[in-house]
Length: 212
Ligand code: FES
Ligand code: FES
Image (cartoon, rainbow, N blue to C red; front, side):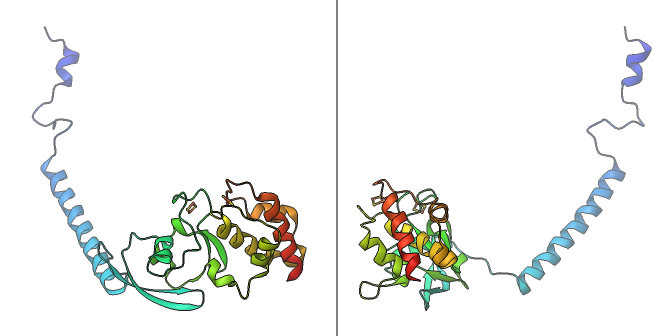
């Protein structure tokens, strides 16, 4: 038999079920949804007028500045800067080793600072200056860091080398003749070398700093 307490908890005609919706709440919700819809439509219209265009999944035009030259390309939005540098642009100095931001073999400069090219989309590099190891120097006119790597025998298999050169060259550019042992180590902290060339890399960077 039901007692008074349990009878009081049953929904009566004036009490809507806990998960039900009253007509009043329904109309209030519909009004809010309509207002939100209008807001979103207004934002959509604004984005159409002033915002970036949708990209992908197909190729779209992009203009990159690489080693001081403007390169106009068609790329898919998913393509990384590393992929675009190596394939259409044939700049193979930056290496795809881990392809996930851990080894530093793909290091290039973006606006003068080292980045992992495997972790930057090519479209993100538009409007910024990209410098690769090919842009630092060439066999006939080497950058002081490139020359010092040769002189100090700072490479073995070479997979990590262009990335280490870019990090060391950034350290030399940033600290000049005052470059310290600790600053080279810090600059190269994101570059791994399976062949263990670190002591020679350190000597090369310090030697190059004396040349600038
Ligand atoms: S290939 Fe980019 S960090 Fe390893
Ligand atoms: S020289 Fe071989 S990984 Fe560095």
